[in-house]
Image 1 (cartoon, rainbow, N blue to C red):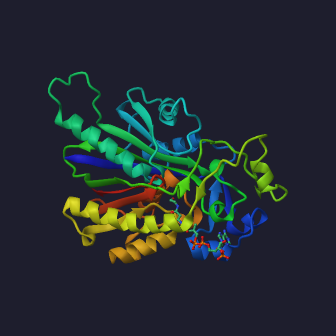
Image 2: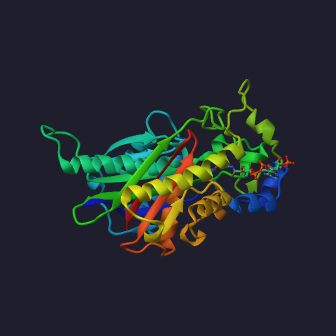
Image 3: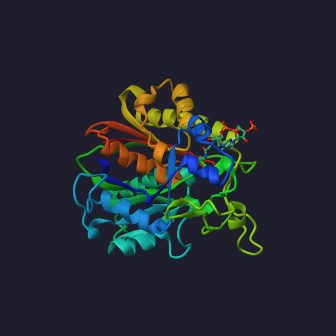
Length: 357
Ligand code: UT7
């Protein structure tokens, strides 16, 4: 018995911005971005809110809309829990999870947001799995407690609203998007085989973002607004200091490559498995080079990793579930396969889980 994945989906905003278009905003070029990161384009939400993107991904995962993968259609009343993993919720209150619960009309679900930066989805699935296992085990005298049998876990971001579009070392990396997964406690399935979560210090503040979720963006429906002075756009609000993601790229790169390989090794040890048992690894997609470094450290072929960073960029908490839905759509994951999800990000957080498909 275990916590099985029974559906996953993804959503990208309509506007796709190519690398070369960013030349209108900062001193950069396609070659630098592709060779340093593997990113060719990213999607930017203009009309779409974070909630809109999450809803689209969730509807696929629940088997309500075409796309993604779903073992079956899950009815609204079957969902007991919604965890919305994000660092760019549309509002602080109500939570994005509460808004999604209402938008999808899930009458029996409890709902909350989770911020573990880019590791959000791995944390979210781990929390859901623990609640399901506790519910299934039963606790003496626990009559009346919430029982969690099925959960909707979403990773969704509008990073364009916390990106400094005048800073070339970060703005070329990020994009908007959403991914979602539906989990079910199933007496006849193995499901999640092992989890491993880590938090370590980021003493120098290598990855920071203050509280400001809705900065203006220098984009129009046709793409980059070439007439916009990106610096001026960001300073539009009187007295508003530049509030955006700042990153010491090299420090984060080193942490990421180590944390990723450590997490994969630890989770496989916990589950009594080796890399040879694993059919597919879906990593957080911050930079293709980080994945290559980690693969080398693990002595693992790059072919085992499923990447879709080229046309999405780094979408933080959305990246792992989006990659997962992409892997199912590409036919890379078959029933019985062992799959590893691994994330790392601000905090510093990192973690991995392994499940049987
Ligand atoms: O989601 C989790 C958090 N994020 C990450 O995991 C990202 C981790 N870090 C990285 O992926 C990489 O460090 C970056 C992609 C951010 C940067 O790559 P790098 O190979 O570490 O480049 P660098 O920062 O050492 O910069 C090399 C050069 C510099 O020029 P000089 O000083 O050598 O003349 C930069 O000014 O590249 C320059 N540069 C650029 N050039 C063209 C930096 N950004 C750009 C740009 N276009 N966009």
